[in-house]
Image (tube, rainbow, N blue to C red):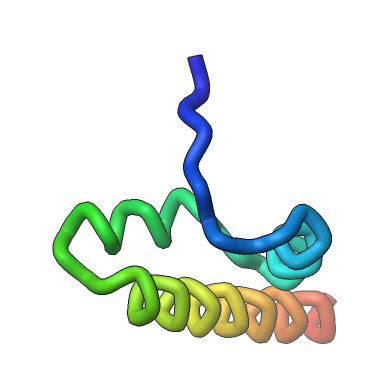
Length: 62
């Protein structure tokens, strides 16, 4: 069974972030490790943006 977590964002905001590589599970893991929710969200967004850049680079090489 999947747990439901309050991410303090609307469905529209969530969908936009997922489209950019946002991983809510990674954010929750950071919070469980002791990061504040604000820092965890920022770090998750940074990782998502970095992954997008890597994917774009791979596509350009193809």
